[in-house]
Image (spheres, rainbow, N blue to C red):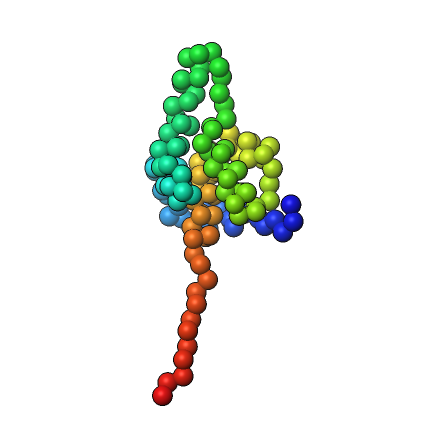
Length: 124
């Protein structure tokens, strides 16, 4: 795709935003729900990542990819035209669960900040 950009911070960029990383470290499910809500999705969506492996394995279907984490990562990448591939998204969602949510949280915080507009008028 043309004009693709990099993520605002790296996957392991915890020092870029310590608040996000502390939030993710101490309560990753809460951070995941916040990310889903900030992206315009149902805040309970990440609960699928917690519940789906046990439900699926009860039916004999092993599930290793967290569906909500992967779906939101792909959605964020496509919305903001961020470089990457579905293969990298799967690997990131499976191997670095907390880092994935923290990176998406930092990205959405960065995208939420709009440019500051200053209107200066001459004094009379």
